[in-house]
Length: 173
Image (cartoon, rainbow, N blue to C red; front, side):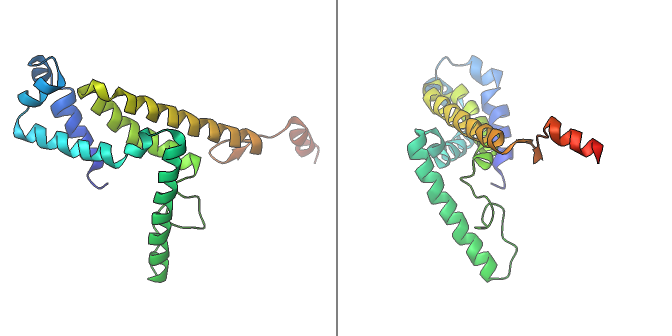
């Protein structure tokens, strides 16, 4: 992940938004042929990222199995960090919400998944079903977060709704 944002930015600049490159071709096959070696290497690096997060574009029931596997892998890493006396990395502490927490999935989809899939499908439009399913999965997680908040009275950022009767009792005390 250390170079993730840099690679996505480079791909966007050198391939996705490169009007000279896009003007040379009308299809993804011609685009590939028109790319220089650096652009092809960058495209292959993004292809690996798409493959790495490809589970995010699977139907929700299959995607959730992959997220649970990933979460367990993260927790095992966190267990090792604890045993070594190290600070446990984010999402790797069994005592905290893990990768499968809907709030964490919403953030992951918004910050990592959708930007990569959007850039990828601009260059390879036939991959649009990946983006569509990822957007559907994000909507599922966002609805789950919203449902949890409405059930707990949370309105975001850890703040809770305060009823008018609670406000009235606070004023009178």
